[in-house]
Length: 378
Image (cartoon, rainbow, N blue to C red; front, side, top):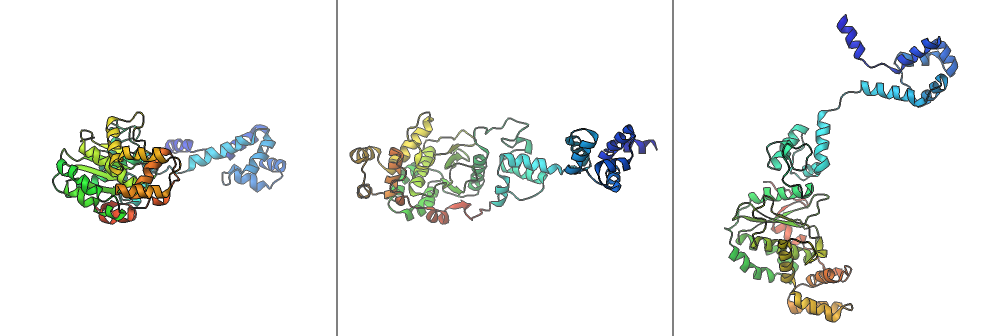
């Protein structure tokens, strides 16, 4: 009996319990309260017995009857309802913690993770980020260790790890810096025709460079990355965030320069680039030395910078389409490369945009690709 009394004391009190106590204090009966409220006695009986809750209308009526705020009765009802509510699935907070930092639902949709209960999802995330347990996943709060990649936003970091997963499964020739340097001439011969981009993955593979395309995640503003699986295994990842010929070549050559310079070789995550399309300032203030070198090499590869400066200096602000086509033909490059760099130099981003042709259709079928409707199975 004592145990039963203890259990009953722990149960929440219905709002009607407190109404009954107030009635006793005032020496009112339930019929009296029904008369005061102008309702049937049965309605009062149901509330006092806990079989009916207190509605907002009733809270106002009771407040007027007892000269207290209606919120008093609403709070009694709210507290009672919460006390009776079932405890939520612990997995809700665990899933919320993951989703707060990483686009988990999108990662599941893309096939990077398998939809599962929270515990299994945490195991998959830990495996994805190559850590021992969920508490060591980068960026998550209350991590057991200090995350190693705080400076890289979570969507970008997930993208890089996906590129790395895929790159490990690719077989290419032995890496040769000499071959990669010589391959620049082959690549330059492709600058006139957008369809020539289809040969890029093969040329890089012959030099020992793993080339991977991964569609960026939502909020993952990323253009490319260069990292190393080991000192002799460079990887170039590209996101094709901007489907334009000028951006493709600039980002590609930017990453190739990182490889040639062995940039990011000692860093576990390598170098992650957000180049902001053709708005990337080649010599922007505050850029690290590696980024300056890569920007200059990429711009020079696409268009010799001295010639570009002379061309713009002579014709700006009245550069005609005929001028651009003639200049591109003389340099043996696609007009889109000239237009893209004019945009960057002058800030006239609407100038001749029709020459910034799309290139995904040529590169995606010929490269190791994850995204844009393709799921790469590692």
